[in-house]
Image 1 (cartoon, helix red, strand yellow):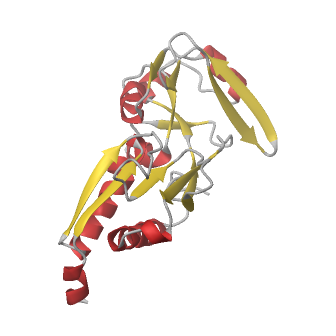
Image 2 (image 1 turned 90 degrees about the vertical axis):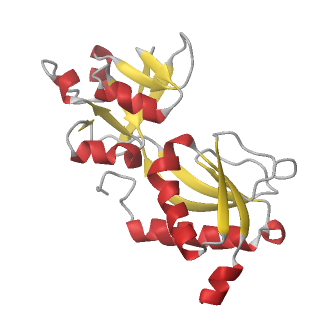
Length: 224
């Protein structure tokens, strides 16, 4: 096994969505580098779908649908975003008990939409409600959005893997826990088995192993 590990060398180039880079992918890269110390990893943080023919990319990790039928897509996990607020924001304000109550709150949105509206869809037991709003603050980075929520600027929608630690420390409070956002799928995308390098195969195996080891609820704040 030591000989096989030493033989796994070279440069692996991957793309990763911004909101999953630190919380999920860097620990996997650490595991991969311990196992294959002669391997090197270059990470390009982007939400853009890369062109495998034109860009020097081995694997692309995505949370958006992939429409190109020539690409191979593997689903690694499914999760839902959650609504959170800081205790300081909720102090002196009634917490929302249904989606309609959000109209009485300052809402923070992901994206850079100027004066445009953002629409949230929340479901419970087969019933859907839609919340359209002009965000008090809009930012196209979930880490910055989380900081805005923790500063008490309003209620925000965040990936649970990003805010789980803050929820455990009670610097963020989950809201409307019986209501759910649509599922988000974490996908691994590549150009096909023939073009997939040995390093890419090994890294994909490490991703599957790590995510499976975290359990089915690791992206859901510990709840089903």
